[in-house]
Length: 115
Image (cartoon, rainbow, N blue to C red; front, side, top):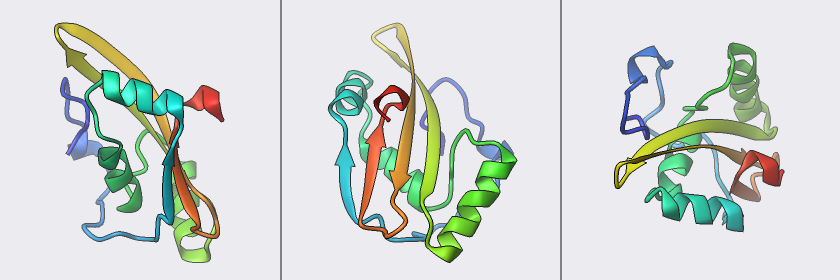
């Protein structure tokens, strides 16, 4: 399922697991990410659900392969999602990052400029 309400790229994505692939640990979101998610009327749980099931979002093939390896070897897992939503007739577009630490102690939803 695509988060974007304007288009659906699910057919071009690799097969995604229906079960979680790893532990998210404690879940955090930065103030900036929460502010934009609220304005976009989007729950961070939608991003987290994609992340934990292996839908890495808008990453190139190399980074996707790195994430697959990271899941198996206990390294940091990184996803990037370009989200576009139309709210009250206005198009909103924002990139979000989701990062799970190597020790699986926590996962953070953030904006790229907050890294």
